[in-house]
Image 1 (cartoon, helix red, strand yellow):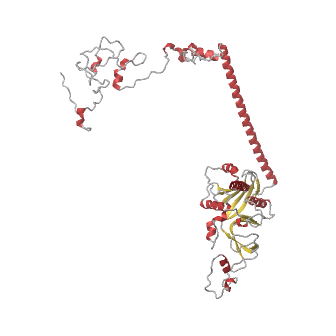
Image 2 (cartoon, helix red, strand yellow; image 1 turned 60 degrees about the vertical axis):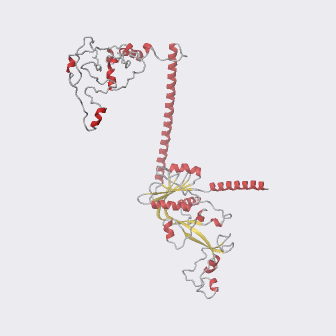
Length: 530
């Protein structure tokens, strides 16, 4: 038995969930948002209107500056949103758009007056507003929407479809806790939007008896008899007595929440305004989502000829747009075909050239030898031009090709890498380079003879002009003197790893110069000439 009950409970739960989803998706949903900068008061008005439209509205909808109307339309489809309530503000007034998705129409209103919830509640002595009132949709009441015109009927239909429909025979009265009243004024052609909370109280008894039913004990110290408690209006002024009449007293078909509200008993329905309050004036009605033709305009009246001319202009624009689109598609198709044809011709030319070479199946290794453009010297540019173009080049076209440069001087292979060493090492091995530019082994040193008559390098280097060695060849650089201590008149000059400075270089701070300090001058000892 336990298993069967568990299975039945699962089935009932799944069925109830499915019915709830169907009911939720069948009712209309709405987005209330703004476009552009509207200010703090209009933003608060949007929040109050979302509160009034609960529970079938997006209460936490966030709008960014980058969002466009297309973004909201794209999201509205999967979420089942059927209406947009859009506020905007100009320098003169506040505007309100009421849009039906997905194909319109769009009603444009001008907000002449509005009051926020905090303003309405602050003006009341007692107000009734709690969270349980917003768990169910409000009851819509339309007043004075008669046969005034096409625009009035359209407005009434739009407002009716904004809220879920009510089946009078199946409705539960306890779910009706709020009421939205929309009244149309014929004289000013404006709409009054009001939001009320609904309260049902029993009638036919005094206020003291109502307090007893509500478990609230009145103060009886001023009364002489208990009958005064049951007499209606006893010891009460006219301002304190309740003014219920035929306009708000009805017989309840169901038991309503609250003490004394029994079935088939007389009860009074009382409305308490909880806000917001908006006064609207219709400006125009458009087809589609604010992009169609104007069906009605309250301020601009046009004749039939003007309307026909306007429709013709719009049709011409649509026709031109369609033609431009077709032309663009044709151009894209033509360019695609040209590209494919060029590709086929190129492939055919490659195959033809491979066939002329005699080996069409083998891979094309590329040009080699004398036919390679990289190996063609500059003076053969004219011949290359004749072969490729088939015409005789101009005389002034290849003037730079008169000098012949042999092709065997060009070297193949990667570029030579430069050895990055110290300055002394580079100077020491400067003469050890081969004619091709490659550096030989760093230990290679060209031989040179030591001569005592060679001048001593130092401050006076003028003697180097008259210093000659008969063994040196013409054009060969003179080798640097050796750093041998035994050789007279020679000093070590900046060889690789040497601490002795070269001529013109500042001396390095040695161990014996450290005591002189950073700011002092190093101790230099000049050797006496022998």
